[in-house]
Amino acid sequence: MPWKDGYTTSDEKTRNDEEIQWPRGHQCAFSVVVDYRVKLDDDGTGGTDADYRIQRHPKNIELRTVNWQAEFGVKIGARRLFDLFEKYEIRATFAVPSVMADLYPDDVSQIIRRGHEVAAHGYRHEDIGSLKLEEEKALLQQTTEELEAVCGKRPAGWYSLPRQDEHYAGGQLSPHTLDLLIDAGYEYLGNGMADDIPYYWVTDFHTERNILTLPYYCHFDDQFFLMFPPIGTGMNLENPRPLSQNWKEEFDAQYLRGRYFTMFIHPHLIGWGNRLELLENMIRYIRDFPGVWNPTAIECAQYWKTQYPSSTFLKLEACIWKD
Amino acid sequence: MTANKTHVAAEPETGSNGRDDKGSMIPKYERIENFTYPEGVRLAVNFTFNLDAQLLRKLKNEPLMEIPRGEFGGRVGIWRIMDLFDRYDIKLTIFTPGRICELYPRALKEAAERGHELENLTWDKTIPADIEVEKEHIRKTTEALEKISGRRPVGTRSGHKLSLLKAEGYIYTCSTMVPDDMPGYISDDGGKNFMLCFPSSMVLNDAMYFTFGWFGGGNAANRLADPSKVYDIWLSAFRQFYKMGGYMNFILHPFDTGRSMRVAMLERLIIEMKRCPGVWFPTCEEMARYCINRFSIPSEVT
Image 1 (cartoon, rainbow over the protein chains, first blue to last red):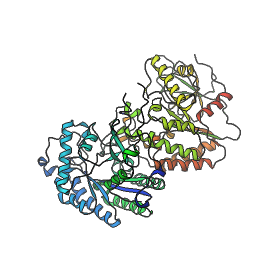
Image 2: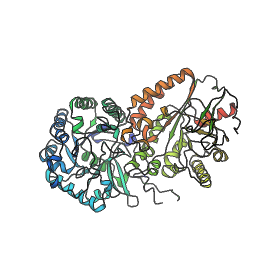
Image 3: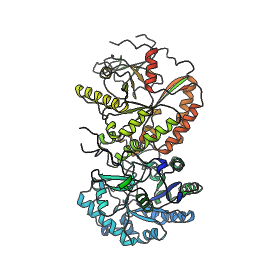
Image 4: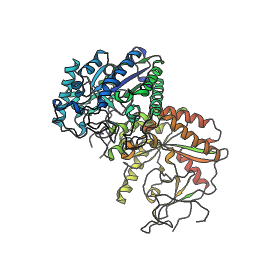
C-alpha cells in the first residue's frame, strides 16, 4: 500500500483559524460562484448530459436543443445577476461550459467586461468521470481554446460542479483530470470538499505534485434547494429558508473564525422572481460586516499560493500503513 | 427472565417468540431494571463521534469527489470539535476504525492527550465473514487504539460478535439498532453473552439531517437541513428527557458536524444544556463503569 493513495487527497491537518491571514487585514474571504451551465436537453425538465460523448462537435448543436430554461438563464437570470453584483460591487466567478461561449458569445464576454472571472466548466459540463484519457485531454483543450477565443484570455480555473440529478453532490473527476489540468497550466480546481479554505489537492505524494483547490459544499449550492429534487422524484421541492439559513449560519461562523465562505448559484434558478430577493438579502447581510474580502476565484488562488506556497505549507506525513 | 422486563428485538423482527424464520434466536435487549442515576443527576448525555473519515466512502466505491468529503472529518472537523468540547470541559467518546490510526495519527493522539476516549468502530468498517479474520480485526483495532492513546478500548459501535468482543475485554456496545432512551443489556443472536448497551435514536444522528445521499440514497433522499432546524429538534428532545429523566447518546460525524455552521449550532446546544443543573456529561466508559458497578447483568436466555 503506497502512502495513503485512494484514501487521502491532501495533508493530515487543515490550517488553524489563527494561522490564516487575508490581504490587507481582512477578516474573512467571501466569494460567489455562478454556475453558468444551463440545461441543454430537449425536454427542459432536467435530463442529464452524463451520456454525452465528445464526438458531438459544437457546430453540430442545433439551436433548437437550447431550451427555454437556457434562454431564461442567460437572457434574464444572468443579466439580473449582473445588475445585482454591480449594485453591491460584488465580483463573481462564472463557471462557463465553453458551448455557452459558442452559443452566447456576447453574454459570456460581458462577464469579463463587467469585472468578473470566467472559469472553465467543461465543454458542455459533461461527465468527465467516464471519459477515456485521450477524450478528456481533447475536451479539455477544446474547452480552453473556445473560452479563450471568446474571452480574450485563457481560463485560469476549472470547475466540475454537480448536477441536480446526480446521486452524489460533489461533482465528477476522472483519475486523470487533475494531472491534465496541471499539464494544461490551470491554476486551480474550483470545487473540492476536503476543507473550507483553499487547500492543495495532491496528485502524487512522492513528488508532491498538486493543484490549488477551492472549497465546495452542496449545502451552499442553490440548485439543491430550489425545485429540488427534480420534479417527480421527491417531495421537498422549494426550500428557500434552509438555503438562506445555511448561507447565513456558515458565513457567520466562518467570519468569526476568519476563514472563507462561498455561495454557488445558478442564473436560471436564483434569477427567478422572489428568489433573487433572497440572494440580495444575503449579499446585503454580508456587506454589513466589516473586513470582508471579495476576490474572484483566481485572485484568491493566487493570493493563497503566494502567501502559503505548497513548497512550505503542504505537510505530507510519512505513511504508517502496514499492509 | 421476569415478565415485567422490557424486551426489544435488536434487529428487525423476522419472526415471533424471539425466533426468526429459521428458528434461531434473535438478539435480546433488556433495559436495566430500576435504573437510577447518581445523586443529583437527572440526565446523562453522551456525545459520541464516529470518525470513519473516508473509509466508508472508499468501501462503498463512491465517486472520486466523495473521498475528500469524508476526508474533511479527519483533517478539519475533528480538530474543531475537540476545541469546542474542551472549552466546555466535556470529554468525548470517539469511535474510530483501527485504520484511521494510520490515516490520522496526529488527531487521534491529540484527542487522547486531551482526555477524550478512543473506542472501536471496527478495523476498516467491515465485519469479516470468517470468524478467525474477525478476531484478528478486533485484536488489531484494539492494539492500534491502545498504542495511539495509551488506553485499551473497552467499548465499540460495531456489528462484531459479542463473544469475541468480551474475550478482548470489551464491556459495552453503542448500538444504532436499538431505539431506546435508557441504557440496557443486549445479547448475541443466541440469547447469550449479554453486554451493556447504550442505545440511541436516529433522531440524535447528525447524518440523518446533513449527509446528502446517505448510503447511496440518491438525490431524492437529500438531507440538507439547516443547523437551526436541527438545533430545535435536539433542544426539544433534551428538554423532554430532562423533564422525564432519560439518557441521550448523540451519534455525530466530524465530516458533517465538523462544518463551522454546525459546530456553532452545537455550541448553542451545549450552552443550553449546561444551564440546567443535574446534567451529567460522562464518557461512554464512565457511564459503563457506573452501570456495571451498580446494576446486575441479566441472566442468559436459553
